[in-house]
Image (cartoon, rainbow, N blue to C red; front, side, top):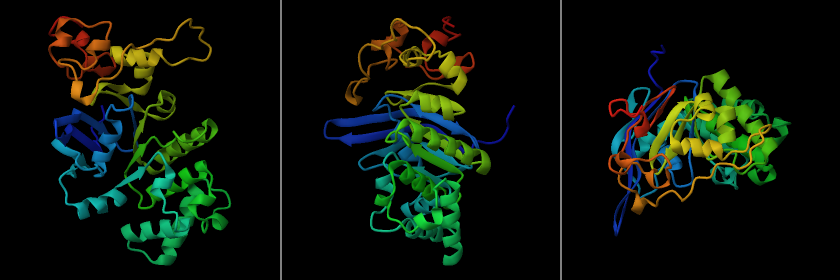
Length: 328
């Protein structure tokens, strides 16, 4: 049994967007933990609330979005209610971020050297010469060839894969304990994706860095993550070790997701299809949000909303596993 306290502890997080027509609940009462050195994959369709959860953790929720309930703790200290300036210090120092499009993270007017050294100097009390040396060291670490020559290049002079490596170097500048990686490989071709995934895994292993990997690509999750949380309509549908969730999913939604992925070496006549679409935030149904699309629903699913409950090696928010109700 591992008694190490989690590095990141998100409890009962609720994210709301006030509008003229009422309040939209985008993330509704989710809890998750990430341990030191662990990669937690967060997967789901567009609009499930994955990126919003990541943005809330790093304190970059776009107004009018707001955390309406719950708390976020990093190393036991609450960070969701900190003033902007304090959160800004934590954002670079303790939490790094890698976004989908590297060009949104890099300033086109500054060289890579300038951007790396400025970030290092902001968070660490060292000389510019030491920061310079650390910047070069980082570029070598993330696998930029001829790093000493390339460090004075501008972002547009790098390919997409190399730019994403620079962004990873930028995220690692202050040696953060946690990295929020939001679709870090989506804009890259498959061979570059594999290199970036291998890089993230190696950095976690060597530095003990934890990663929250947000993506809609189950292949990336299966390759990279230790555990996976499957999100649906602002809630966690299932969470557990990646092998169990991929090989033996319990929630009907997760089963549909896994069944829709073509497997090499398996001759399947038809892939699974989940009929319908994820509900709009204004039209979340009563009970389980997945019930209109679920082939295994029964009366209670349309009436009561399930919380996560034990389902073999994973936890699933599904009444099929309610032992007290007699369905497990």
